[in-house]
Image 1 (cartoon, one colour):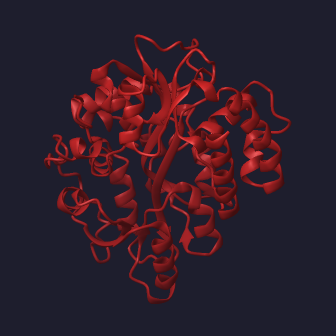
Image 2 (cartoon, rainbow, N blue to C red):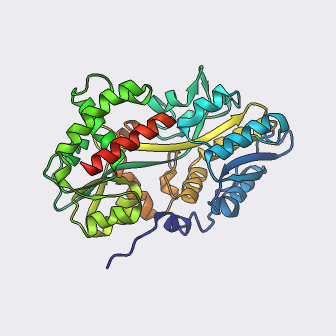
Length: 372
């Protein structure tokens, strides 16, 4: 009997999670020029932030973090709008696909890149497509803090993979697949796009509803042809693992945590040649922030090997800094490096902004796929 391994809990009890702190850094005189405090609003439900991470940042810089927890991004957004009038908020941590809305509402200002080092980030996390997504009107509006992926989990003994592995392997008919409906349709769309089989770029469907219908009608029809090889639909970790351990899946499009959990059962985790799906969150600087020097010290620390390792451990996800993986538990570090070399990092496919109309239509196509 295989017990589900919770990667987040594992990370929280690793060497970093146990409280190994970075060596004290030289304290910036500019950072301490005003209050020596930082008012930060972020995600609720991650106790290691207050217990371990913020104390480590304070030890390294002398800056105290006043932490305001919110359950979700809509709550953060509402509180940030209020803070434009009341003040008392410096930095917030939304996901990157929301940054355009924060900027268009006048909530945030650009980061001063003279005070930060983009070279500190792993390839693909501050440049390329990610750099474009993080930039609004020529200003860098968000600095990445943590990220995760959805890529190919495969049986090392039985999966039939292309060289290099491809999203098309999910639908080849040579493998038994474990898929999440809406992710599978996106994978088919990206695969068809790469093969030149769509009338327009797949990304057009995220910006225009008519374009989405045109594209996703074709994608759905093609995906239905491959439905006979799908042995498990998943929406969470337990379902995903059951697809492989109980129902005979040899390949799947799953979270990195699923691949990590199934290592001991003979499964690997690989980025497809088209690029792994990736999600991310980052730091935005409030338009009326008063502790801007401290905010830049905060962003710089999270982009350091020690800081990024602790931040990723707190969230049960991946570090953003070069050398961050080396500071995490060795088992996690080895797994992370085996799945993502520099080329795979540069090729990450970041989930784009998905407006309410898109989410609704996406759900309709997912339901059609499941019921076909």
